[in-house]
Image (cartoon, rainbow, N blue to C red):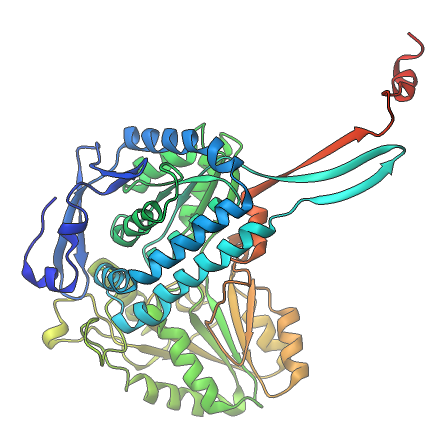
Length: 511
């Protein structure tokens, strides 16, 4: 494993943490066996953080075997024992918060203040939530639904879970996948995205240091085509959980179908931001800028399509553009930075391509370019506002995953709701109004897994996260996530002293 120099060391001493490799299997770091390497690159500077050996199929097999070996003991642990382990885990994460924040900002390019105030505290809170939730994973007592027979439902873990996480929130996505799975008694093999493995590996190490048994959490860092597909198709993996694009999600579903395993998909989004004419305009403008630019727009719940009722439209466009122009791009580790780079130069170029094509049919009000000067080496792109596009245009219908907000006008409330629903996606949305009736209608009629009212983007551990339509199915976080990671069993027994043969006689007669 190669460390490129002292500048990266000052941000985060990656080489010291991962000198033994970037695979975490059965409680220890090892090197990948694919024969290929991958570089983690600081997107703010374009410099290499470290190069690691990618996992091959043999590493996936070893990780699944470790998870399978650990499953009987972990599944048979009492809810109290699993809860205690997760409480210790939360404490270790809290103690190492600064290390996690710096690693997350280094590999993703997100401002350090975002990692410190959002990603890491959210992960600690998730861990604490599932530590408590582990003790409330209940079946159901039923009673005598059939004569003298008593029925009840057991809720049981599924087995080995194979999960694939994206690069935009690597720490939080690791938590969202690992925590409900292991709180329910499963064991897991997680494949983080190739550009961002650092915090997933630190997360697994923290779990081991907190006393979770070896093999309960395993990490393989390989390509999607090799390690990912092998994990999804592995016959000893009972369930697959995937977060990423809708296109890749279709491929995951195709591979998983061959082994008829349970599937949980959290896919793309194109969140509408609906502003009615009685909304607090200042609040809506600030909400739109924050909701569109969170994590440099690389968020599947980010506000991407603002629909503004016509009386407010022009003023909304002008004020939103003015506020966007005050956003400070810069070094993610500098205290005054509001917006960091995109994950890579390739992603920046992809975003720029969407904007450049939109110039032919829409108005680029502000932004629409990469900055020069000291930021030119990084994957930066200015906050961009686009107006007057048509509903069926690429910039409105396709997921861009960058700091780009498109604004369109609408006239009637019916039209605003219709336009909000008029994409294949349905992950999140928001509605802005001073009327409880308009707000209530929006929550009912907008087809998305989450609808915020007079806000956009906050999430909490106690509430579910997941989509409708092409945004996938299943829930992360909350008690609802246990539905994904458990299976129910009907248990039925005869209450009489000697089993009766009445139903046998019904079928077979007297014998």
